[in-house]
Image (cartoon, rainbow, N blue to C red; front, side):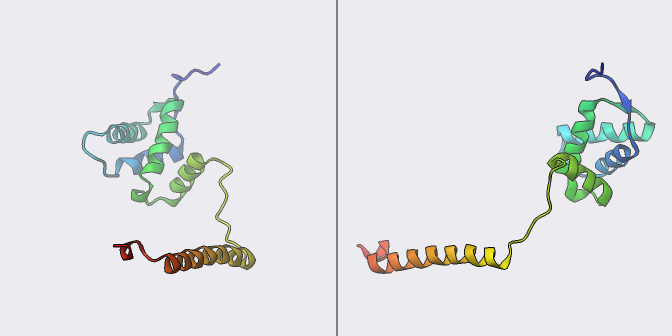
Length: 125
């Protein structure tokens, strides 16, 4: 039976993520900065981390993803943050796009016609 305090060695990906996170810029005296520094030093010394630390590591990597340039680490962080079922963006078919745009055009046209016939609010002085 595994408990929350059982420590296991960091994987190669986690070490790379921790080192990349250690190079990021943070607000002064923030929890994320202290956590990143701790994880980075653990990665360099071959330390062990708990499951909770492992989860927090990937959450913080995802939060600071714009400062990390390793595409493999970013894809792992995205997968862990968004879950296994995250699907790529699917574009609308031309038929769906035309239907959506016609609905928008109808609403805009209806609004303009209503304002023209009722007058704009500033005309009611």
